[in-house]
Length: 334
Image 1 (cartoon, rainbow, N blue to C red):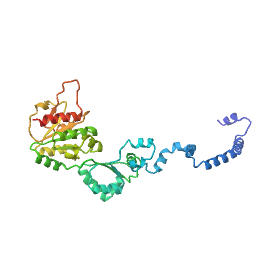
Image 2: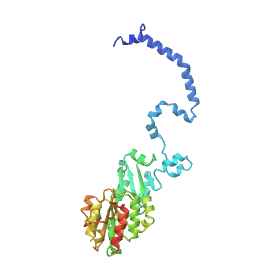
Image 3: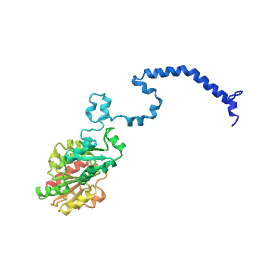
Image 4: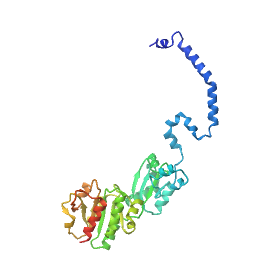
């Protein structure tokens, strides 16, 4: 290994050769370097000069973090090119609010809130901690996320550690819903959703529930779509005439319904009793499960009856909103 360098450059001293080659290189390229520097200085106003920096490809992420927020509202893109407008169309921010002051004013104004994202630092503030604790008890989904995750959700806006999404309708407590339903009907029917995350399905179910004079609907805090703008749009105005309660835990809510004389009925393809043969007359809570998983096993154990909708064709299941409409037709026509 000691003689390998001599083989590559026979008859020359390696150190001397390196020095001479370095001197020759810099002397030959001195003028070229000065020209390049003049070129870069004169081209600073050129928009494409950033492409000459070889380090750009490796510093993309760090440079993005130093940039100003991409936008604060959709209005900022009104005069920009179509590519930017297409980028913002991936998420509609009309019902979003972020920033400590804006969010705090919204929370204290008692507007309907669908969901809140915040970093752990927010909980160190007494005023936010108390408000968030009260909202969580009312069924508002509060999700603790990292600063970077919140920046992703808001597309780089100056969120200051907290953001929220407004709800399209106010919700009431479970106790209020039970009292309201029993006061307005001898045998009220209330729908409960279990794991339905598609807002179009939730909106269609709300529309059917109001059409068949249900007295309310229960939506769990997690594993369910909230009262977003899409839900309100699909519901076609029905959300304004239907009481909604958003609960932290669906199974505990079902226990509360049982204490108040409600029968719990679940719709399931494995139900042994056909819904057309169900003749019970009592206050009912009808549980609608998701299309892929149906009602969870723990929730099925809370049911007094598991009802099935008899199908005559080769299709093995129905869309959740369709199943809800059919079941409500049978249950309200008796």
